[in-house]
Length: 252
Ligand SMILES: C[S@@+](CC[C@H](N)C(=O)[O-])C[C@H]1O[C@@H](n2cnc3c(N)ncnc32)[C@H](O)[C@@H]1O
Image 1 (cartoon, rainbow, N blue to C red):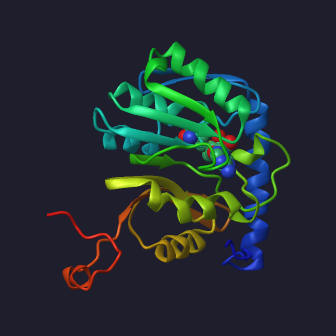
Image 2 (tube, helix red, strand yellow; image 1 turned 90 degrees about the vertical axis):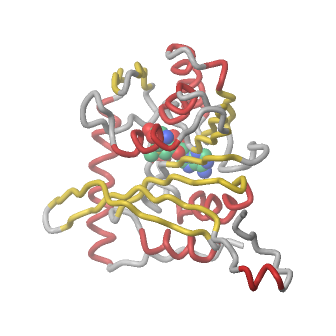
């Protein structure tokens, strides 16, 4: 059951993040539609679909990490696919991909981008609220989730705002059951979100995390730090296996 969410930060920080969020939303909205070319991709981004931040033609650290993590033949879930970017990168490396998003226009946009980038035959698309329409388990699940817990005003804002972290909470609670024994999750997250809440969800779900900082951004007197968080199952010690624990044991 999802407990009521309360931000784990001061009122001043919440106020500052609200301002930061509104500015980002307005500038994202004003910049759409647009075409982005990076990492050898050519993406058309529709009006109410999230446009990834890209530094230059090398893209951004999260998408480079996704590309580096995928192995040919793996089954990959691109949760919240948006323009399709991560799913297309995974398919290009020879993965079989399921790409889902709560926004039907994002799915249409991602489908067209997959076709345009010649990987449509390796990606299955579905409109889905988190795992609702997803079947089976995966070697790799990637998710660049909405950072804020505010109520979104429209589908574009649902890219960056997830009311009371309902979607994020469900994702972390349910993701372990969707991982194969070698399964990994790659998440993009930041301290401009409630990262302490995310860590508590991860710990409660019994997942093992490794966070790698890849950048920081200062606005006024607030500095946000950005992380790629890699999750795996937490393995039970051998003694727990002997006692017949239902936890997973590390494969030999
Ligand atoms: C920050 S954007 C990332 C988009 C894309 N993956 C990328 O890297 O550019 C977050 C995406 O998650 C989707 N999303 C938000 N809540 C969701 C939910 N409950 N279920 C599925 N997708 C969701 C949004 O529509 C949006 O496309």
